[in-house]
Length: 55
Ligand SMILES: [Zn+2]
Image 1 (cartoon, protein in one colour):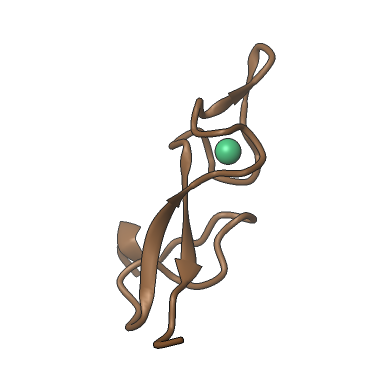
Image 2 (image 1 turned 90 degrees about the horizontal axis):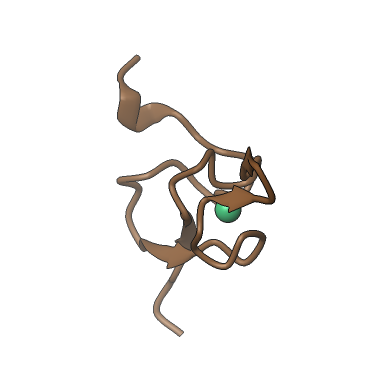
C-alpha cells in the first residue's frame, strides 16, 4: 500500500484511477481548512479526486 492508494472521504475514487481528476474540494473551497481545522473531506489538500468519465 502506497500513499497514492489512500482515499479521503471527499474522494470519489482512489487517486490515479482511470477517468478521475483532481477537483477543488467543495467542502473547503480549495482552502484545505475549515475554520482552524484541516478539511475532513480532502484531508487538508484542498483538492478531491472525482470521477470524470467521458460524458
Ligand atoms: Zn476540503
